[in-house]
Image (tube, rainbow, N blue to C red; front, side, top):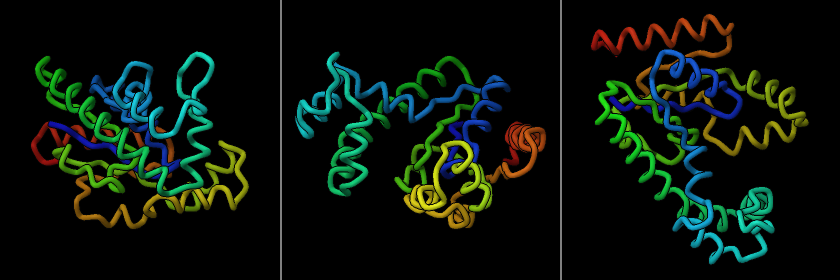
Length: 201
């Protein structure tokens, strides 16, 4: 069974992802895959250099993520262009990894995809788990963790679908509320897995 894991910025999705790993469940991380598919020699890398020019490269010819980020953060068309290059490669890579894990006999595989809902990637999964915290907790965590001002934190939160809207999406199979203690979150992960194993999830 393929489980999509998603959330919002600073909802603590990494915490939940690590809890699944602790239970012996393999996690395929879209962010890590996205870094991998843009390394020199990969098809997406060549396309990015062609589209954005040599000036986005470091001396060692790897992509300068900060420079590229600056370009796409200010320009929606450029961001769209980058996503059109990277996303198909990421999806294909994740699908391959999931198939390999299935062949090895893993009954549950997690696809950790931050923008699963925004990119409408439900078709890649059998069920979707949403990691939720109220927006004010997202804001506080961003301000404390990243030293953002309130304005900077709000800007990043608003670049995604609001977490309260995601919570209402009827395509979400299960919600893990991560606004309490670590042990409360851990208990919810265990409950979800127990339900799955009983065929109720």
